[in-house]
Structures are given as C-alpha cells and as structure tokens.
Image (cartoon, rainbow, N blue to C red):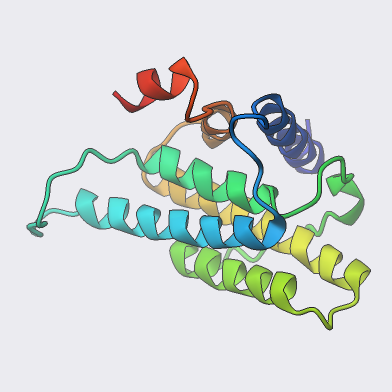
Length: 175
C-alpha cells in the first residue's frame, strides 16, 4: 500500500472508530481538535524530556511517547471533516531535511490552527492546506517515533481512536 492509500485508510479508520463511540465520546469540532492536538503535542514534549537523563521532575510519571504521538495525529486527523477523500489532496512534498520533527509538528499545528480560526479563508483553499498540514503532522510524528525506536505508530493511532474514556478498554489501557 502506498503512502497516499495508507494515510487515507488510517484517516477513515480514525473517523470510523470515533463515530462508534460518539454517544459517549463526542468528536470535537475542527477548531477544538487542533487545540487538543496542540495540547497533546505538549505531552509529547514532556515525554521526550522525561526520557532524557539528568533532569529531576517535580512528580514521577510513566510516559508512553508512542501513545502521545498517536494522540497528536488522531486529533489532527479529526480537524478534517469525516468521509473526506484525503487521497485527492495528497501533497507528496514532505520536507525531511535536518528540521527537528518536534519543531516542524509544532509549526504545522500552528498553521493548521491559523487556517481553522481564520473565518476569512476560502473554505476549499483552507481545506486543501489543512489536509497538507495533517499529512505533515503524520510524517513528522512518524519520524519522531522512529527516532525514539517506537514501532508501528499507525497501530497506536488506531488504538487511541478506539479508547472511549467511558469504556472498559480505557481503564485497561491506562492501568
């Protein structure tokens, strides 16, 4: 399966899973989803800093960097309305030079937030760029996962999209 198909399938799976639990776990609107993605990105940064030796934190916490990265991607994907054909707007020009992936994801989510909150934007143009931002978030989150030897980010994204907070799976996952 090529990248375009893989990302489009993952996007559809995330939406399908979230719809399954919508009664108990409503999907936030796009503007709120991008704020949640930014919040989750803060947790990614926290997890990375906790993995570094030499720092003493004010409280202990077990971190799962893969889960935090998955939640960033999940929330970014929820910024694009359901049933959108992501493959139609796929932009293959993902810059993979020397940029720090955490910085790129931060800047990309900032751009996505700007698009979603700018009521003057033409809807189709904003959607095109929003999809491009989501794809960049996925690629750089995946790159960050690989740098930290986290296997199969896609599986983690599917897992977190299935974890309704009021369901038994949530408790088992967080224990």
